[in-house]
Amino acid sequence: MALLVQPADTLTGTLRFIRYGFMPNRLRYCGPDENATLLGYALAGSADPGLRPLLQQFEGALPYLKLIARANGLPDPFDERVVEAYWIGNSLLETVEVRQLYDTILQRVKPHLSGQALDWVLGKAPAGARPHHNFHVFDVYSRVGEFGHALQAMDQCRISWGQVEAVDGGELTVLRQGLAFIGGKLTLAEPAPERVTRQVDGHGFADDVRAGDWVALHWGWVCEVLTEQQQRALERYTRYHLALANQTL
Image 1 (cartoon, rainbow, N blue to C red):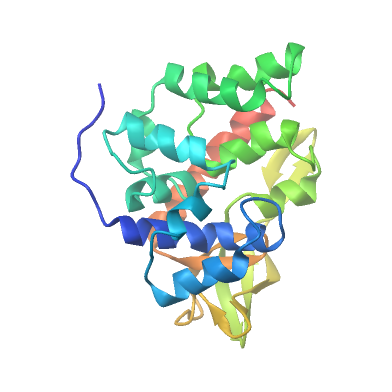
Image 2: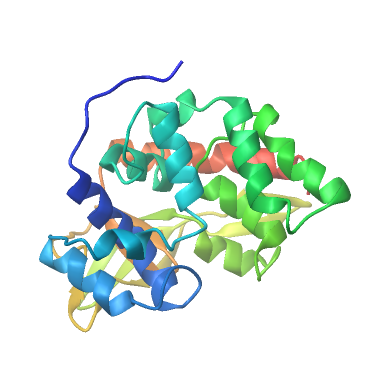
């Protein structure tokens, strides 16, 4: 049975989605070729009827957003809580039923996979997968995306976290655990310093970041500052889905 909850601020959800979708869009990996327009919406903190059609062209994320919203009785896939659930992780993921996720995965991968590879991916739903972005990276994108199992691409495509050591203009130095392949398994390496980008042409989403803060990262881009609770949720769902992916490597 769907969990009925009160509507939240849709504007906040759409703008938050842009924070995570901006860099892969800028790199032309997903969504329409409109990264400057999307950045403008997010920086302005406002939207008009032209924004929603742009976001609906993020074909990798949209089916999962719709699934999370539907399973939780929410009318809008860009509800802020849904957006947080997909990119970071929260309790809304736990409401999604196995059959619902199975059907969503099937629709997504059937045109691209067959045989054992298809069975492996579909089997992730009954094995406990959640409709989280990092599940998609580790178990779906890795099999049907253009980069396949390339470790560096998977590491950049997943949402990761880093703790800020230093702020240097449009860049940060963060302590981050990169993705590693050790003993035939995917794992997280020991934290190491890494330079990441927080601004493009002097604009970004972490203007007030300070040393010690946690930040979310996507393709080397600082998406936003995380609370400690959000960082723990992101780490938990990441480690959970790494373990799930390792079952079929």
